[in-house]
Figure 1 (cartoon, helix red, strand yellow):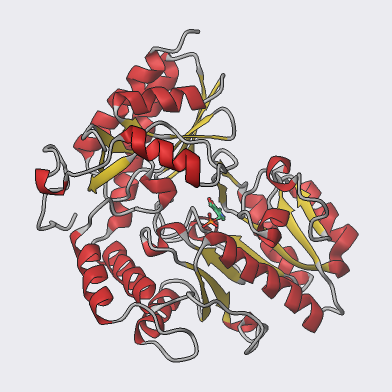
Figure 2: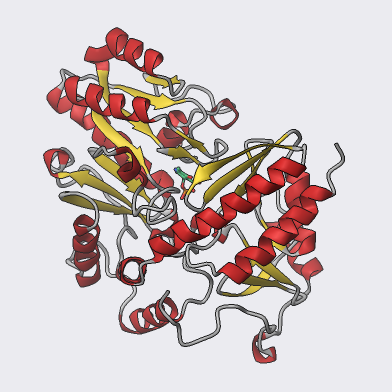
Length: 420
Ligand SMILES: Cc1ncc(COP(=O)(O)O)c(C=O)c1O
């Protein structure tokens, strides 16, 4: 891997001159008092990060196997990203989409070069990228299919928390409690028979289909190859827009630049966010040439979307990902992770399954995963609990072997403590 001009291994604690933090208790108290209580938080507040290491307010060190839920995929404090932010912020951060913007034009070109011919809509988040996808599908139905407006989505999917993204999400826990949702969205299991039956039943009404190639929040479920390929064929046959949500899987996470490449298909549109801006709020919907004229001037927009700073950083991240051959490291690390995890599965009865692709890994337990994630945190390892019983790992894509080994040692320790 490319050599950086600073130490990524973070063996030493942070330099004391930046260390003037408030106490943890103060942060927790203010959060409880002033921040809307929509999150269940673990009792830690991070203050500093370097490479794959994070440090909390008490300078306790953690190995980061989560990357802020697949956002800081090149680690914390990556020197060239920090420099791009600094340089860009000094020159210009934002001017609005009333004008042209060099960074946006340059980043859009780079994204198209690395995906498929078409055009980019920039948003600030994953949910907003999927809102744009929703409007694209619905507009396509209005324009090209006699007002067809049914959208096919999958069970156990996650597409975000805004109105359309929530309605497309295949998890009743996320969809319920808000009254009527947007109509004509069908959630189907990811199996071939149901897929074919659904198109037979609704074909003429369907304007689009959306799925994650590997479901992330749903517990790391790669969709079956026959399902994905047939969905592509049926969308073409029935003149429906196929949207792939690569918000979590995209940009190297699965061992290819985009997960759809594993399945040998091309979507009509693809949503991206999370690691696209490396922690700056940035999302995108990439729309193929064929569908790029569907949303016309005045039909969609965003004040922040694709501003100078976000796009400059996005461009820098993509340049690093491709230029330093980070995806090769994903594949090498992935092999090591799966080898170690399969060995753990053999000796730890609580582990029911180890699955995933690249560095998007789920470990299914026979019990709730949250207490296990909490125990890992106490030991200095950051992992995530999702889908009730799954431990999800999303380590940085440029992780080195030594840190990977130390993190997996801690994970194994936590698993060994589980009573059968
Ligand atoms: C596949 C997928 N789609 C959409 C989203 C929503 O993105 P955001 O939280 O940026 O709105 C997420 C976030 O976890 C995701 O994993």
